[in-house]
Length: 101
Image 1 (cartoon, rainbow, N blue to C red):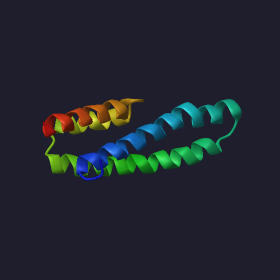
Image 2: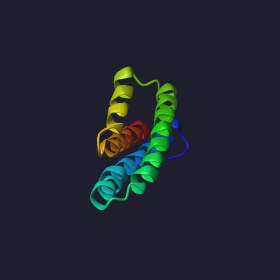
Image 3: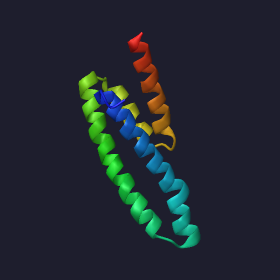
């Protein structure tokens, strides 16, 4: 997975997607239901860092693979929709398998 730009992008995308779900599903309820704002502070910071890495990896992978603008926009949109990163990763994995055949 880490041998190609797209592989590295897939890994960063998965990590960013997991951090987004942790932020929405765990940290925010802890902040608002349990009064623990630190959860959002730390998870939000980590998610923000991973989101920046996601954007950099997207630019790198899309340049290396010469993706059209529509595919780049779709990948970006997937990053701001809960579970979108997992759908994106699955599609990229299927494309990689199809190209290997």
